[in-house]
Length: 290
Image (tube, rainbow, N blue to C red; front, top):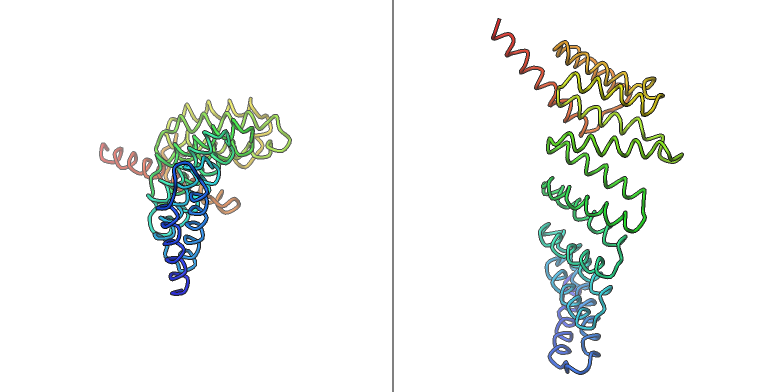
């Protein structure tokens, strides 16, 4: 490991010397410096000196920008971001953003979308759900420009998930219903429709409005006549009934039975826990009144 550090320091010194010797009329020294900074960064990566490696990738990127090599500059920023990810999510996000901006300027929308999505993942780790949502929205828009339909849907589904986490249920519902409607016309996507309608229905359920839940189930039947024969439809209908009756035990039983055959992910479990807590509070208030 010490050998990698020593080699990295030697290469970094050579790169700095190249920069000091640069003539404004010639770019060859910038090219040499960019390569040397990159090699130095790689050596420090092998030594697991992540911050040092990241800073050297940034220097390499700046040399590439001097030369107008935007693609190489963006890739160097990505190298920096992946190093900083080991020590600083803020640093990783900063340099991925720089790479996304460059790729957008170049019209490389798929690459810009890919790294915008990666930024969203990093914000989720912080956790910062609002910024995660914003970057997934940006990724969806960029994938759409790049005509990557499947990736657009994947990003929009993530945006809907974030909206629900932020308790902006109506926005989540709209996305799920739009994607369900769109998926019905695709042989490849139509099998995901009942899952999208389930997620949309759960957003209605967590809002606790029995009429809205009933209306949505009717609308989903019109959208997809096969939905009323699914386990997902029965689950939503039973949840709606337990909410209407204010029956916490029934609600718990319905959730447990569904989970026994179709395990609930953490997102659904979180929404259903919100519903159960609200039901418990309502029952306690009613008991206090009597």
